[in-house]
Image 1: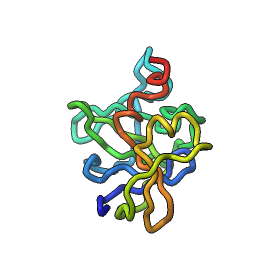
Image 2: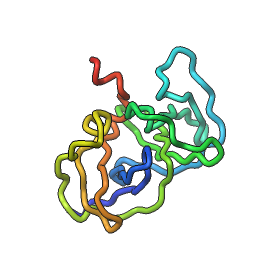
Image 3: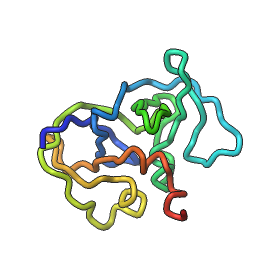
Length: 144
């Protein structure tokens, strides 16, 4: 497998988003809250006069918030015609998947079991491969 991946940290774990899903990586400065939305939807931000829904990946996994407020980076993805900014702990490299995805081992929690396509080997070691649609659905998808 030689798919390119945006390698990042999410909830303190090595994770990756298929580079073909990522339009850009941005630094988020201002988020406007949206009343009545689930906690993992932080609000809206703007990119080149387009509104992006900001998703906190840690909260979407059902975990505690881990991103520092002063240095917020996000991967911009489009899902079903809507733009999302996936807030990550850090985005640090673009590299290749060196293996096919394998099942996520136990111990990572229900959130990762739901939102990961599997685990792939990269130059930096085993990495959780994010399924952006499942992540954007958030923890409520488990109850549905």
